[in-house]
Image (tube, rainbow, N blue to C red; front, side):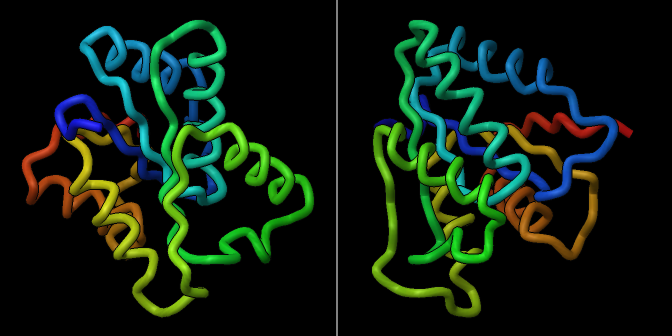
Length: 156
């Protein structure tokens, strides 16, 4: 896996009225056309799940790409609703690579996971409303400091 051909995703768990699946599909396709081969998700509900599904859909459609899941801890899906828990397990099963730490949840594990995704990537596809106090905001700001290209799909 090369950083230059890797993109990660970050986004809110709650997708608002302005979320458009076609924007996500087109952003991923555009990056594939530019040579991106690896896409990293964090395994959270909401935007991460949508991104993982779209990457797997494009891979099933013949694109030569990989899905990597960087989980923040063991038992990440423990409190997910039944349907989302089943979908998470399906995503893990179909992912090309899963980075699952040995530890259970601890304060700071999400930040470590987010920074690890950014450090492995050259660009970020985000669904970020601008909310400062959020994991998505923290990840976008870190990506900006690291000089990554940020494609924000959130529309006002």
